[in-house]
Structures are given as C-alpha cells and as structure tokens.
Length: 73
Image 1 (cartoon, rainbow, N blue to C red):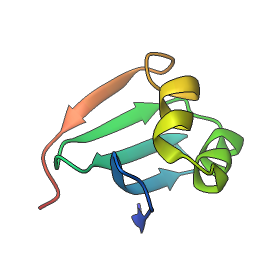
Image 2 (cartoon, one colour):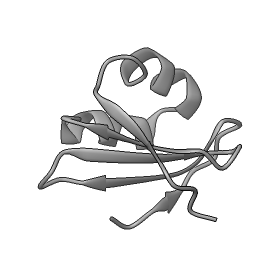
Image 3 (cartoon, helix red, strand yellow):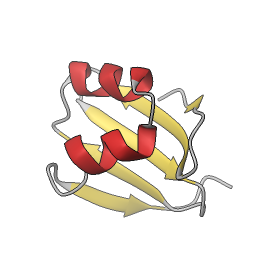
Image 4 (cartoon, one colour):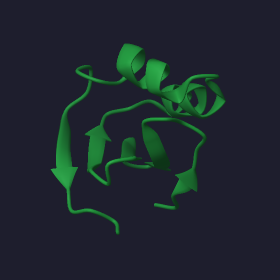
C-alpha cells in the first residue's frame, strides 16, 4: 500500500489496497489502524472530503472491522 499524506488535524496519511478493500490510516499521534471491507468509493470520498477527520468519524470509525498495527515511524 502506498501512503498518501493528507491535510488534517487528526489524520496524517491514508493508504488503500483495492484488491483487499483495506484502508490504512496513520493518525497524527502516530497510531496506525487498518480497516477491512472498505469500498473504494469510501476511500475516494475520504480523500476528497474537506474535513478528513469529520468524514472518518462519520463514515469509517465503528463501521468496519479494524486492527491496530505497528507504528510506521
């Protein structure tokens, strides 16, 4: 997965694996979570959202199975 830096107060980078429908998010506090079963359009909407954090809270958090992964830094 290739990470993309995003402008956000809460999110630092996002990455998406379309084949696996896996979304990886690195937060500003360096925690990293991987979300499973995320459709490509949800990922695209996240990238286009004026407020990435608000979109994440509304459309992703608590909606998809997820695991915390080791920090990227």
